[in-house]
Image (cartoon, rainbow, N blue to C red; front, side, top):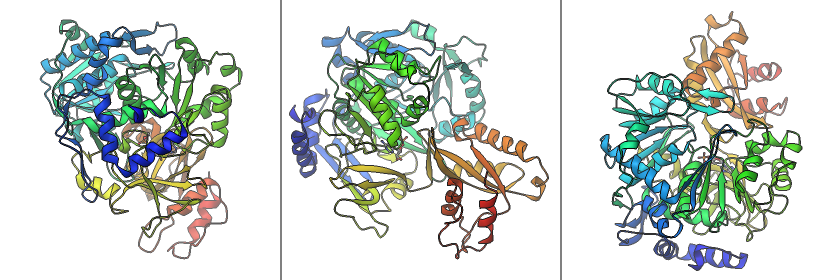
Length: 635
Ligand code: WTA
């Protein structure tokens, strides 16, 4: 058990060295001692970095929900597994013990089976942050169906693309969802999507807002009456270690979203182990991660990681600013939260409000606070550390990705000394390397490079659904033999890592990954647009915001620019979602291009950032004069 929980820096270094020297032995021991298996593995790991093939715990049999739920029933059946905190603070919170969770998940699993869902089928989940979202995810895992959760802020088009890519058979949604003062018409969005998604045979609808919705005969069913009829016990499907657990879409720099596939045993072992250590979880702790379950953080650290450890996990339906900017702190005080995990963008938005919003709350239950999703700037780090952590709670800046399944670089609280803006040291089993443009490894400290990981870890994604070649090309080709993250990093004088941001055309806006190419494709669909280029620029709260340079066709030239900009943003909102809207749109007569026709984004980025003269070498452009014009007319 000793390496499952790290308690001192000395022990960390010892465990780390061991894990890197003998990774298979290291992970086998953790898997052996901390989980329930129907059958143990024949081999810990088989892999090929070039072909991007990974088999962890070969031939082992298990069900992850047995580990998340059933095995806790004997000892902590009456303890809370989930606390649901609604959007409206006047609506009572709901508490689900592990025994109740077992019953809820079983009922849902039985409903899914009855509706014809079988092992290996894909189920789309498009729900607000309500308990049924967690029950649905776990019910899929219980019966071996592959869940594909789509964030309920995505538009009907984005939803349809994701349903079609992995041909989901059934979708679970709600009539509507609450978000602050707004309600989102989820069922209407689903109806729109389904016009384009023929694979869906059945729609199950959670009643949340009680609003009027259309129900299509033969296709749509209210969920509650089905649950009421369903037995509250269920058999867990026997899954192979490498059977798919879920698909989760993430934006790439080009093309359609990538359906990252995670499998069962490796993901389970990795999320459980990292949750325990990164949050210093102790039995009885109340843990709250504010991320929506529509993102990987919600999968790994709202649902799976906490439940695998028998923790109490808070599911919060609302937003940080409703009804006031105190909401987060109010919830921490109300539920006596011990670990709090959120995103820098939320911290920045709250830090700009009056200090009373946080000062008037009792946050003394907190032990550990965490950050995820984007680099946390120094100011936000200190505000979070001083006013929320009270300089008493370690602040863990956790670096990871949808692709890594779980946290890979992070301080371990009460073990690793923290340093503002640094994710710090790799977790056991993770060997980060920095690579230069010539594909050489950069040795030594005080270096900057492309951040790669050298050896597989159990949580690594196994493929992109339906496109293994793209998986190889995106992550394993640039630096052969290594996993390439797409991020740059700095390694300081003691070996701490600081993530410097994306090195590709993915832009992180409020913690959401957005590819520039898919947004440009949408802009170019507008009838008056000839071409466009989208870049990111620094933004106080969102981290980055989007700046679009748009070249109009002849027909667009005499149109009202303001209306045009509105139409373009509306189009983006409809096709992708409001999160991808442009903060600034500049109409230009041309884009800076190289002789081979490539847009020089480096220059556009500089202009968007406000640079006025130092554009570097522009002699390779076919149209160097355009740079001056664009810069002069910057919005
Ligand atoms: C960024 C979210 C700096 C990074 C878990 C990564 C971070 C992308 C951090 C993955 C951090 C995430 N510091 N940058 N602590 N955490 N990122 O797939 O650019 O939604 O590649 O996974 O977010 O975003 P994703």
